Amino acid sequence: MAVALTKDTFNQSIESGVTLVDFWAPWCGPCKMQLPIVEELAGELSGTATIAKINVDEEPELASQFGVMSIPTLILFKNGQPVDKMVGLQSKDALKNKIQGQL
Image (cartoon, rainbow, N blue to C red; front, side):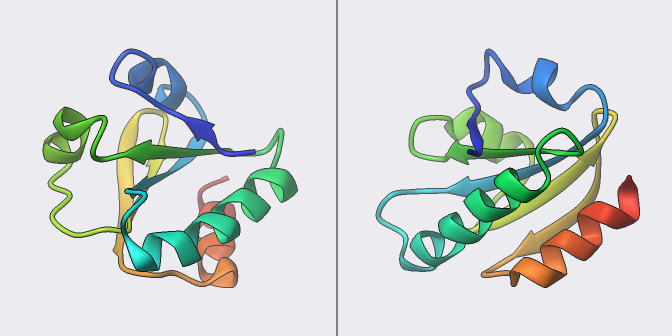
């Protein structure tokens, strides 16, 4: 299951290893299609990479910190640093390849 992050848990969650963060909102149509893919990856990559999600309505500071202008936006972090940013609906294979490329 993807970890729901808040501004209080964000830095600790991304500081080491590889973390994929999905910026989403419950009213966003494409986000509703992205979420099951993100959840699947969380199960498949458990113990290898962290898969997380941030509700932009609840955490607007984090969304603005990373320049999230449209959702879904997925940002891949490695050891606390953003290494890739993808805007719009992403396929499971594309996400998995990007994550595995950082491991």
